[in-house]
Amino acid sequence: MKMNRRQIAFGLAGSLVGAGMLTHSAWAQSTPIKIGVITQLTGFAQIYGEANKIGAEIASQRINAAGGINGRPIEIVLRDDKGSPDGTIAAYRDLVSAGVKLFVAGPVSGTVVALAPLLKGTDHILMAAGPNNLAITHELYNANVFRLQLTSVPVFEGLGVVLGQKAPEVRNWIAISSDQQANQELSRIFLNSLKKFHANKGVNITVQAPVLSKAGAGDFRAQISQIVNSGATGVLNALVGSDSLTFYKQAKAFGLDQKMQVFVDVSANLSSMSSIATSTPKSVWSPNYWYPQGDTNNTVSQAVYKLAVEKTGSSYPFGFVAFAHDAVVAIAEAIKAAKTTETKSLIAAIEAGSPLGAAGPIVFRKADHTYTGEMTYVKFGADPTAKDGIKVSDVVKLQSKDYMEPATPGQKFTIE
Image (tube, rainbow, N blue to C red; front, side, top):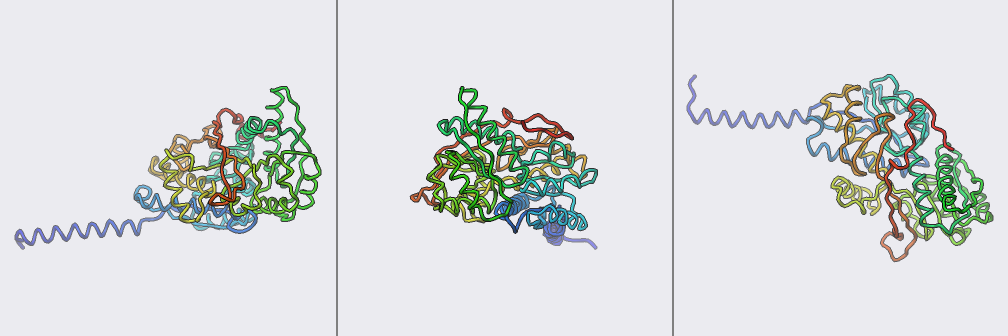
């Protein structure tokens, strides 16, 4: 049948509408790229796990709004490991049975230490978002695992230098730590760095034996009493999660904040500290894994910060928001570059990539898959006149490459 011009025009318009509908339908029906996020949604490390959840969801939201990965949407599949290695392994096996091959896990070190060996020789990839345990990229190294966090060596070597510079008058130190290996390691790194800094100035300082407690103990009054009577004027708090917050609350009742000249905290987040602002000491130094207020030139950081504030209601979202966000971004950008989800191609793309993330360029040392990046340290303290009850009074930035330990994939790195 011969068609007139009007019929042809009408048919063309209809076909264009249909094409648009098909494109939308194809997007809606495209097989999603599933990323399993295993983190601590309950238990002693819940505040960190919630941050990982939020960061991964923000990354998915931003990537999907920009068209997904080569036209495919990201789907975040969450599992709660309750901060338990057994829970992490169970969650991993559950996700594998559901066909998931790409994973983000953390931020607790112990759970990733348990999980990492299971990926060796598989077609799965793990981004460890937040843990700093040395074993992950040393004796437990395998090519399927990337650690999106600096190890404890550069972070706490650098922290020792910062405290030596900023509080040279504090020469008697004591630490309180959980019984977890990673926490005791980083305590030792910090205190050794501090001793070395002062020794180079011709000064000897006193470092007392650490006071230990079980993770999740919830009662630190005996340990606090020991610290109060120690004669120390500087204390390192190597407790994490809710344990750390409980420590500060109980320490306030003992007047520890008045006896110490300075506190150093291994993982204090400004958001959690603002929640206990009245119990926060006046002088606390801590690594800050994401400080967007001081990184206004990073457009990704600012976009993630805005969304994180909306989701959390806090002016100081946890640094683990950035780590989980950047872990998802690293996977997504590798898939875009490799144009496949095949494991070897993805590993090569991640090793070669340097996409911009919330915490800066996402770059891994090829030799051992450990993250490299700038280190930020903040000094803060209680301030009843501040909006959140705490105020940042000093910020120091150091380059991690100046403090990183050598790569020893497959071999243990021993801390002196």
